[in-house]
Length: 206
Image 1: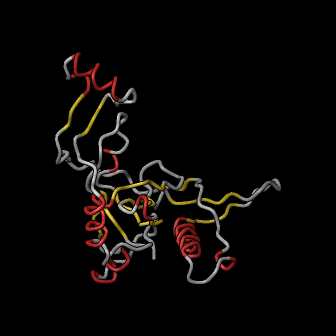
Image 2: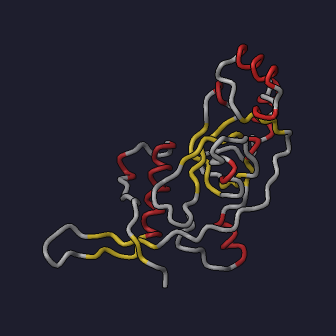
Image 3: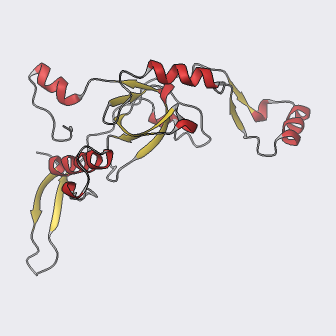
């Protein structure tokens, strides 16, 4: 029996949005998540507002072993002269640097072209890599799954927004900005459930 808890899932008025639009798909996705997570509505015996009770998110899996496939350069490991030189060139020089090179326009075009067969709103994906961040938040996303939420324009053509599947104590929607090179398309869990004959979990989407 799943443990009940309150959530920030919100009912969606899907019909108010144009049919076939990305906005309508996102509203439909949220409504499906709401309906799957909802256990019931508990009325208040004293006349207060009713309380919607939801299933808990799946437990957080053990983080996968992950090592960056690029060299890492730490600012504090540089000689003091080199630190001073870099700060004089760029006062915003970060204290933790990665040497993963920035993609050229041609490389970005090739990356987007190679993803053309799966790069679409609603595609299930897994995060398989990450740039480094000072607080480690980006690295903690490696191994997590989600769905492509929004595509980006030409300026950030090699990035997308991903709506992460909620895990553990998470109860609010988490949409993150991810580079295409750090994503791997995966089979829809609904399709996998149909293929294996195992009923999908209430947390799975349509």
